[in-house]
Image (tube, rainbow, N blue to C red):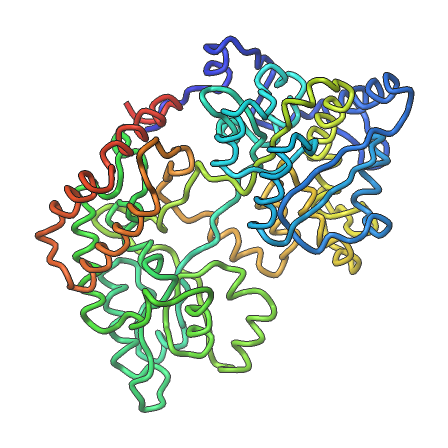
Length: 515
């Protein structure tokens, strides 16, 4: 079990003050989208009066697309009105372009007031002294912390200090989907164990489930080795290289004793001929295309790419009889886990430049913005769904999209602190609601990869490439599993993996994981 070390305690040890932060919604800090109420409004009004009622300009940059011009941007207009600001958001469609522009601006001292950073940029800029240490300001961001949660706050930390606000966590999308009509034709049941899964994969390949008399189907496809994520999970191991807790100890899946058993089982599945022969060469959504075309009977895929209306229509067009069924992860010797899910990951994080501490009025307005869009009863609804009674309505407290919802399809660009993912998705994709809930409810190994930073002297690109190449050799019978220990030894000696392992365990222990 994970040892719960509260964020408050961790920061207290650093001499910081985080009193009053909580993991749930702060019901006493709600804001009406139009006018604002309670503590958030008081903060905004105080900031406005101190500035003589003048609007404060805020510049924010991030990666994204489809942002309308300011005169057509209703989200900007509503935020400006609610917070007495003039928000100038710039988005860059290319992540590379964004990174280049950010680097130029940080180097020249032309800082935006709020900007998106990846983990490496967060580390780099914080160590260069360019980012504001938010630790002493957390009492001003209570609503934000309440919204994103303490675990998300940890994801913005470097050397024990908070340098970024990480978005609230996402939820898992992937599961196995199976051709129910093929099962029925071959008089097979939905597989509940990995052994049954393997048997169905074999039957879908060899018993002509589409009835065309041709050997043109195979059992299983997916995105590279991700196709076997639930199989790894059935043996109780994460994907190769994952960190997770097991029996109270942090382990790396490559060192998990059950990994070799999982690889041996996957090797047998591949050897039977039932797995997509182009599995490791697949890219993008080729596995989806093969499923829609009727080539594969089981696919490991995210729910949007099989249940969204346009894909349902494609499936009906290609094969009206195709009946895709979402199924639970198969069980095995290590339990039942639909792969692993990185609880250390974040969909994004935003930092504030250290230079902004010289302008406390503008800094406060940035805090106001973050708190406002983090309020579940106010600004959060605005950046999720648009304007109430125009783009959405509330029915029994739940958002329901109107026919004008598409006018604010870009609102995600303003979700600087994230969104309550389950409620958001089920409102936006009401017809896919059951599939969303099903995927989220699957048991998964909680991996910790996102909490781990790479130590000096370790090249993750080289190590990950070597791991991927050798694991592929093992499961495709190009290298005997008897050489697995030699593989680990090479990884440690030639790829500095031992240094990485030691550093990772130390970092995770500091966050309360493992003994």
